[in-house]
Length: 58
Image (tube, rainbow, N blue to C red; front, side, top):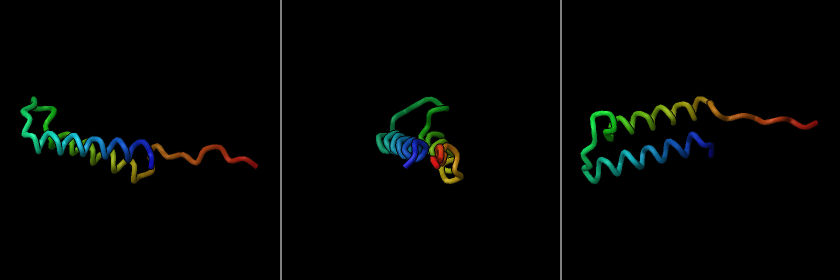
């Protein structure tokens, strides 16, 4: 797993907690916005951003 996949999972969990606990937040930090940020991070992970092959030794 890469850092982006873990970040996406954490963002989805925060969005779930906000939605499940019905926490009132400001207009920017709603569960839908956090979920959309999580989807963006997940899409970046699936696109291969942040993954590197590292240095190859010969």
